[in-house]
Image 1 (cartoon, rainbow, N blue to C red):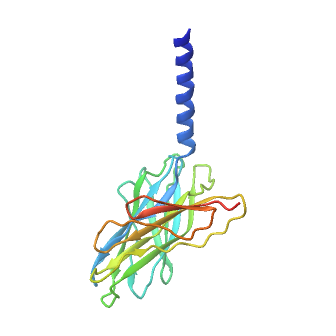
Image 2: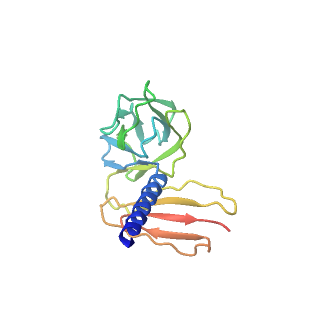
Length: 223
């Protein structure tokens, strides 16, 4: 009798674990960085992670047009299905990217879904060029918006002489009491050295966790 009860209990426990993992699947968009010299063209990749329900994606990527020249986005190696990638520069320094498919049953892949070429101006400053991600819309096959858990812009580094590590910009957020937010933090080092992040003087409702690879997460839960 004990073995039967134990087997049933184990099965229920495994079922709950699987359901829990499915529910907690993260939806994120990360713009990976690139580096190059003045006059060179570099490719920035856009990485999408989701639970398999996303069928369409749109976002804006902002850049400094005095430093970078943006070109049409290209399909990524993990695009998936028969999706197409379209883009246009809707205003100076803002490129809008749309990834869609005429079939609602074809989902986007997990991984690199698009790459964006940028040409570095011949007179560009030798420093970091930040790429800000905004106006993100992810939808499923019922045209219902999927709220991303994490959004992270990218950076293009021009040259590497004398450049020190630098934190990626963090967008402002507003929270009310009882709400919680996990904010992705990342830093880059032009020389490729491993980075350790730390925090100080945080309020009692905030906790920072260093991942040990130049990234971390700030957990904020005002109460």
